[in-house]
Length: 194
Length: 51
Image (cartoon, rainbow over all chains, first blue to last red; front, top):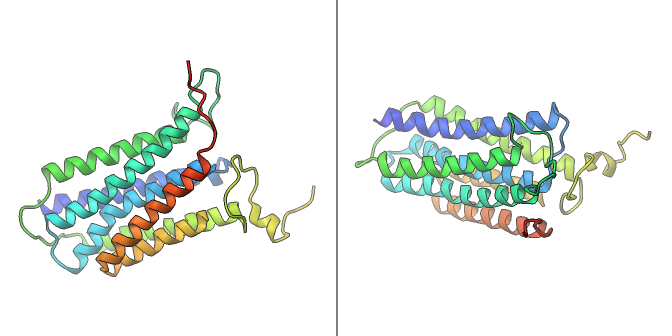
């Protein structure tokens, strides 16, 4: 059973990492600059993934028990509630008939609508895990090398997001409501004149 | 501000990796608070959902 729990913790972390990589694809391949609410949803997703990643990191040091599961999946659910609030707000901003929404739809829904689906899924998975799969006794988790790689991927994606948003924001305090350029290039005087 | 919050999340991950449980909890909650406050700053437009 501890193998199942290790697989689920790795999968939950990597699934959210996959969603964030998809957002990077929309940004750098699709050429869509993320708006401030999109960036806030990315932050909430990273905090969602940090929950199971925390469990994996703890399991590399010692046996984990039900308290560790409660702390890690509870943190994940808490971040998902915050993220769901942000994405629900963005859905409501564009819910009026005739509103084209922000950005191009993917598989029929905009990215912020998909984000709401992801956050609700995180809450459901965390709750189901705590209800059905929390261990009765302290246990070691297998897949240690895989867990290290999973944690490293999450850290790299966080770092990449920091770099990407710095390029978009430049030396300004906050992002504009509708970003149209990478302001760091302008701030550094590297923008080509047309 | 956004960059700093991502770096705060990275610091949270570092605390989790190093096994500093209390620091990780504090940084996690600080990250949540920072995201909430930035959301409050950006959520200014009235929603056009009145009937």
